[in-house]
Image (cartoon, rainbow, N blue to C red; front, side, top):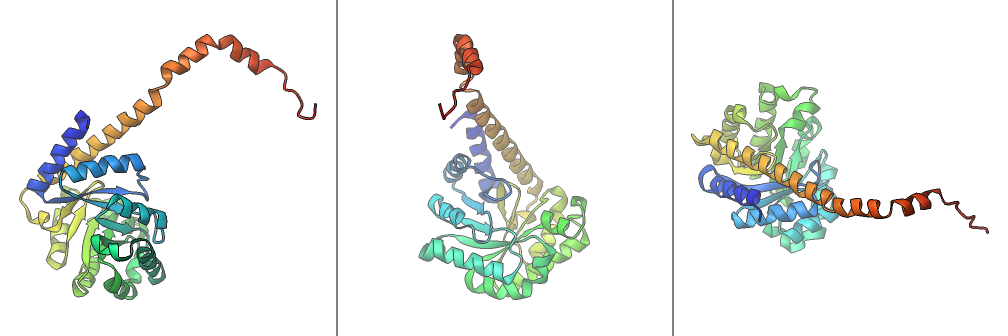
Length: 274
């Protein structure tokens, strides 16, 4: 591990011990996590004794589900599941790829559009029989309503989350809330918690729902933000080093072979028919 990764590990351990952090998060969907990035995140999570939440690319992303099983993800989330049919496809893909091993992980679907909320009454029975919970993605849900990100903590959006929370409570399903989780969200999160809130998440860090009741909520979020910033800086430096690792040899080849390269570029091309 490099210096930045050791610092990130300390942040995760502090988050686990002091702020209610339970997992780190990666996405094959919007974030486009690459295999080497996921391996680094897995090592950090395992050393910090934390779980790993992985958002796959869709309801029937079989390759992603197989990868999640191979890597040992603890929470698997399917995005953009808007209809009972799409949810049933996720259930079938889970059974096909995980089989009996599905008991080793928690499977949830994303509620992130007004369409999904409108279909929730039909989807909840399917989830209750086959899955573990719902992740309410507040940013995409807000945008799907034609609102802007500044409306994410509005009464309209909070009421929608409360509807989902009540449905989860009534059917013994977990509720996770993500999207726009900042210090401004604390009152909304505490309101959700009164109904049901098992976990909430930033882009890279997942907290136990009870953390919203802590007087150190803001400290915990700040620690999570520092972790995400360090993660992005480490990623930039890693790929930057790869991009630059052959610069010296490229320069040497160009300097030593300049005339040859110029000659090759101007040489006539023989006809294949000749």
